[in-house]
Length: 280
Length: 290
Image (cartoon, rainbow over all chains, first blue to last red; front, side, top):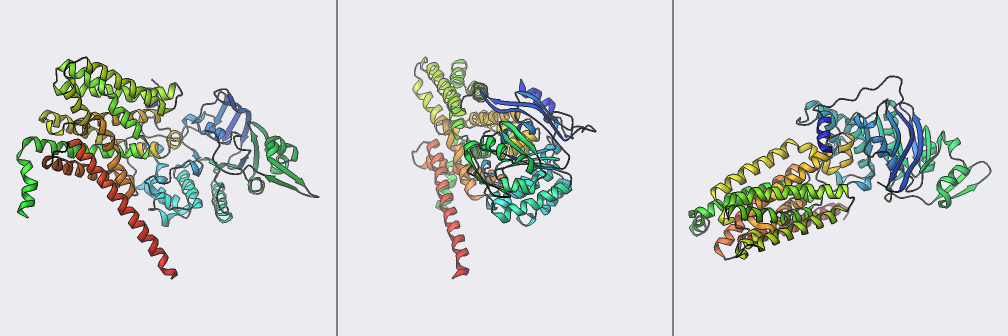
């Protein structure tokens, strides 16, 4: 009778679960996740600081999406502990998970503002319709990401960068404090990537903590406070210079990466790009 | 002009035609509204299977009630809800592909139904009604049942509109917003089941899936927001019901088949309309460059 439990839990207007003082926004210890017999995450432990921006890099199938889904509380760990502000993720509605764009049905008959309004639904609770204040929050979120002109477009009419900004607006409407973005930069041109970073800087200004899964080692090194190298196990976590060493990169990517060392810099040639193929 | 009026009004002199038209209107509206979710979530096979899976319920109702309509309805409803929840549970718990779970439940239930029915003599006539519908045999009591349940279905969709929207568009978001995702999922399956039982008499088991899918798919081609898709789909379906019944009245085409073929005609029109509109737009975009 799993669903009776569910109903009891989802009492009407939902509030944020209490955030304990002096706890870090995210504290993961000895996390194991397995799918049937395969180990997807193997003994991962780390902490995040409030308001920092972290890139998670690793080859396809490294468990980046799995890690995010476990943090968001939509996937049950096999063992280990995930604490968001001192509590398990299941009670929080301040965690936003932004799917890979390839996982979204872009022909779905909803407009941009419909999608952003979805972020409000956790706060509204059952049997309540959006009020003026909710629409105002949605409008403001669209202004913040520069999409107010496109509010009434069907979502399939947006470009890749605009689609990603729409999801950021949805997370803003959700008043998310921890944003988990799965491959937001994949398939975007340089200009769109840059504009995403403008909004990420803005989020940092608001104290939102952001984790971004990416394949782009260069962007990860240049634009993030800390980087995590992941391939089932966490192979490194810290400032880019310490994490992206030839040894660590080789152990994460194995034969899928070629390192070219010149006098004063390290050149990385990787063939791990592309979306999809990432595990559930 | 008067000839046209005669053509339209003559059938209304028959009480069975009026009841049939009312039934077709209501069933069309409720099927297309629920069918919107069926189309958007790619559940056509589930809908088709569920329609077939209520056969044992109807058979038991038939044996218990000796042909009375009431028991057919309630037993059918029971079988549909059991099948819907069964398919959901099997695919989740046994980690079998949902497609496979549907196939197993659907074929087993249908076989059970045939086994039960074949134990009764002279079953062919009744089976035909069940398979292909008998909208002109709708009684006042049937109409009341259709009205009450259609109302309940529409009301439920209104109440959980925003939750069903999130669940259908982005199930992961539904979970991170801590919506009761599993409960809503089952509720939607049950709604589809009830819709099928309510609509059974108009088009029958074999053509049921067309009522769920075709009008909503036509509306999908022409709209870009969910509420409009539901309204337009309901319009297409109800209109198809009425037109189909008139066709059936003046020709000797079976009513269920006439209704479904009219739905198909609307779909083809929608398809043509959309492709012409798109090519016109493309041309408009090209002209400034000339």
